[in-house]
Figure (cartoon, rainbow, N blue to C red):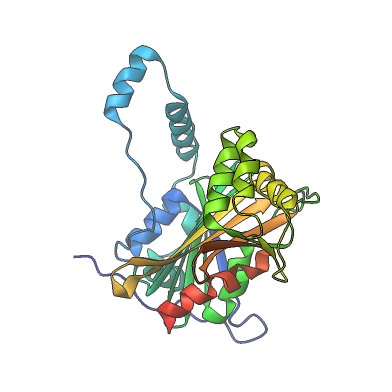
Length: 308
């Protein structure tokens, strides 16, 4: 059985840079080679093997869109330099020995106490990020294309700011005014049925659905919202959506069970967190305006259950 190096990443030299996150850009072959040098540490994702049956059909019927994308991905990997040579040139492998900090980060990715998996989709561009924490240290891995990855490691006090980097929008992202109030709270049944009516093009049903819940939607001060505003808000929550973020928190020490999920939606003016809660008789969803830096705060109650 391979031995996984669980040592913490090597500390930074004393001075103003001490303790700051260290980040590396690595290609998939480089990442896989370093993982092998870390005692065969498993990475937090799997690479799907080509479907032989699908290939047989494609030889007769032509390539599907998925097959074309797979071929483009394979072609991109084929253009990369030899990983051992590239890592040696960057000083990440010296005399056959990999950088101790990198090995420690990969070991932490492989055997954490807490895992946070983040799936982000903005304007059709998808990113995946894996955050792993144990005993005051955090290692993260992120990619948008599965070819180039960012590996980072740092002390836990830096985790909130590193989480905030994930949903930070590009500088050229255009925002507009939204018709959804900064805070609005719906009965779950209304939001679910109303949203489905809009998505399916049955807006003629939306008014009836909203009228069935008159007075049950409230704003940030707890005041009831009129039906016309509710109708506009539900329509906007579907029509304005430009992206989504989903973060799953798992307690690895307790068997890897998912203990909580945080969902955000990107509207015309920015992010909203969807917070499920319950009053005396009703399941409800609060939709609240948030900044990218608040992702750690959104995850806080869930992480507290695991790290307490």
